[in-house]
Image (tube, rainbow, N blue to C red; front, side, top):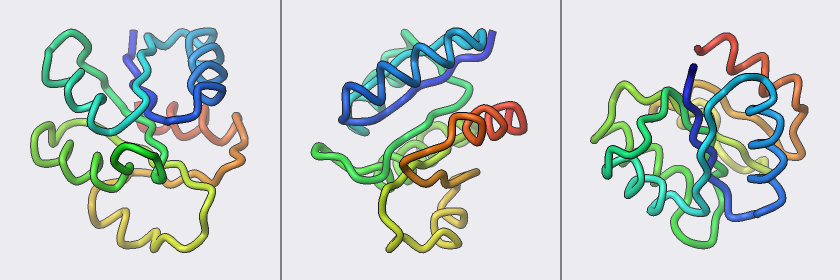
Length: 118
């Protein structure tokens, strides 16, 4: 079973995505910030195959999580989500993001991206 870590500071998004991805057969854990996600991964309790992270969060952003995770866990696949259009997608891909999904997101788009990457 593939493991997915969802990182977002909006509880409704964490709950909705968790429910849908668990229903699709994924093992899912959530974190409300990039910092707490890195702490969780470092603890070894949950070794995700892929992380889905919001870019804009109150406690550390997804770009920082992407950079830090690529340094410490280069094998971790990362998808970024954003509700803003001012991010340079090419730059995010250069940093290691495998996909950038716009918010509000289409669930089919997320599921398709997961199936392609996993």
